[in-house]
Length: 111
Ligand code: 5GP
Ligand code: ZN
Image 1: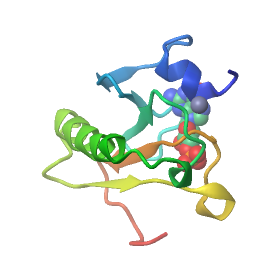
Image 2 (image 1 turned 180 degrees about the horizontal axis):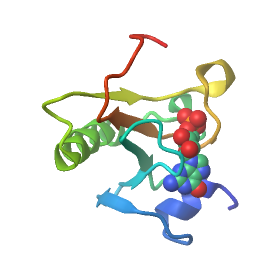
Image 3 (image 1 turned 90 degrees about the vertical axis):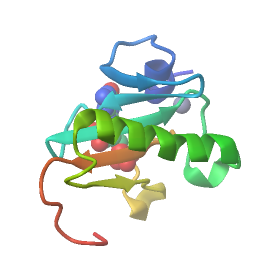
Image 4 (image 1 turned 120 degrees about the horizontal axis):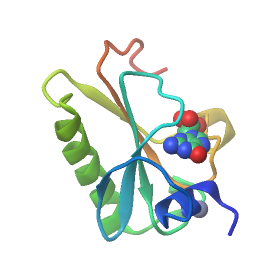
């Protein structure tokens, strides 16, 4: 499997993991767009949100985002969760993931 996020989630390549459950990891984005920029990455491969029908996992991704935002200290100030899907959605890595952005005023409500 040469999917970069599969390799990160299975720890075949190192990354800065800030939170982990049986089903997912939360890591720091390699190219942060805000002081806090984390990625919630399921351990199981789904190319996009459209492929994933696992409601437990999807709920777990939001729970992990909440926990990671609290740990990063941006829960009170505020943060944004984003799932980009396919080309016009801006998805560049074809493995389902959720961005957590915070630590600065985010501009634009809907991109
Ligand atoms: P997308 O554009 O698919 O929604 O988001 C992909 C994100 O993954 C980008 O923000 C990019 O900086 C991040 N990314 C890509 N490759 C790596 C990597 O090897 N390690 C980490 N930590 N982040 C990565
Ligand atoms: Zn993958």
